[in-house]
Length: 269
Image 1 (cartoon, helix red, strand yellow):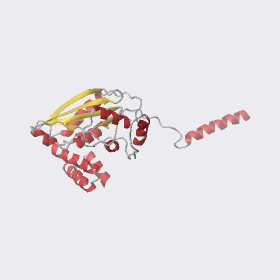
Image 2: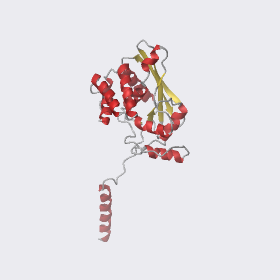
Image 3: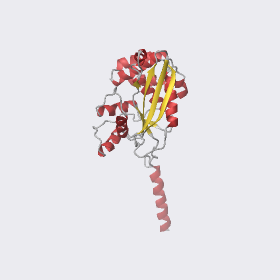
């Protein structure tokens, strides 16, 4: 009788443990973490001025599009800017492969994406991209997308598709886990010898995927509007809320419901 009671008591204890909220540990998120750095304007001649001021927009929309790939996680652009600031790196400066690898490790990323864009001044554009393996520093998966300047978002979507489909998506040790803050990732890097300042983790470590990728791809974003969107992001980064809202509103007036602009506008409301 005592043995039966003891066994029953143990079973009830186990059941009670699993019934308590938060006791059951969630499975770790092992999807590879990818960081996208600002793209360079490689245009020359008359076409260069047309593409000045687009770097932030190209970076932001590529992050947004890549976030639709459920096999990977994208570092949020604002989080990347914060870490770059803590490392005394200019947000607008070019990031070489060595710096990309160092920042990638601080962010707990496994892959980085860098690239550039150029215009021929005659309505055509080229968008190039490549991936960097943070663990090995190997540059791979070079892509070159050609298209028209009246559909910059189409170029970005094509690059996103090719880069993500050809990237080795196997998880590797050292990737940031879901719920791990940027500060925790940086603390780990500091303990391994990397110099970093104390960070305050942002609300979002990873970028959110668009709710309707098909609707996003249907928007034919031209260069002029892309420059306005990029300028709005720059003003938002500078905490110039009123000017950022004004610029986002211009984009939304031309393309109602454009989710990236609407999402950022709502953040400033």
